[in-house]
Image (cartoon, rainbow, N blue to C red):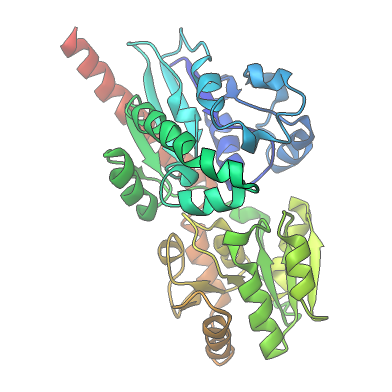
Length: 377
């Protein structure tokens, strides 16, 4: 099959980009189309996987706008046009890995479009009101944002109907794809590179948070819970929420900023447990902790319910408050966990498993598509 990969953008490195690296490994000859590309992420991606090849990157016309990479959040009305401008003729399969615009590419009648959808576009659907508050810094933007979002929401819905088959990372997201797009989605959990991590006897007594530092991650809850209990906390990550979090943190909280991939295993190994106070579509960091034999104390919502086994690989807290998290941490400290049992759970989400399931899904969907195409013809 002649395959092309489409990704929303490559301006930072996170869980979506790790899935992209797996796709680049599975389809080694496929070019990667993306709206925007920041060459500074190339080194990070190359370190994360030898499958990354910068020569495979194809960008949209937005790449010529020097300021767009830094201010892409202000371009929601232009992004759909950029996605639709990619010329994808000549491919048998287009595989989009998307949380926003990549699913909107236009393909020819004989091309199958499979989308690994990380989430229906959050700021258009269940998170739209918070987006308006965060984006609209001035009163005039408050007046303009709702009609603008309504227009993009319509485009997003109809663009989603162009996809021939959906894959996604959790049952939680599959329910949202069905709700907002009216489409079924096959669940294939994203890959965890468990071989990077080792179970050790290390435990330096600190709790750990690994996350982008933005408001919805609720790192403030973890900081406040550790302050109340007098427990040390290490925070890995960068983002716009850093000043606010640092202002409210006590001396027991250490902000480590960006930590390279090769240094993360040592931080997991030395931790008492990972704190996971946010609602996520999946939550790969809890499985990275599990690959190190470390449990997670998590908010009982979203993808965490599918990646953490209560009492075996971690514990849950029911309310997204510092008090609820602190109570769960107290319960956790009186509970014993088997590091090897936790590790075995993480191995179920390994990279080879992901590649195998993805290859099988693509083959099955392609055969069905070919049959239906011949039938229609």
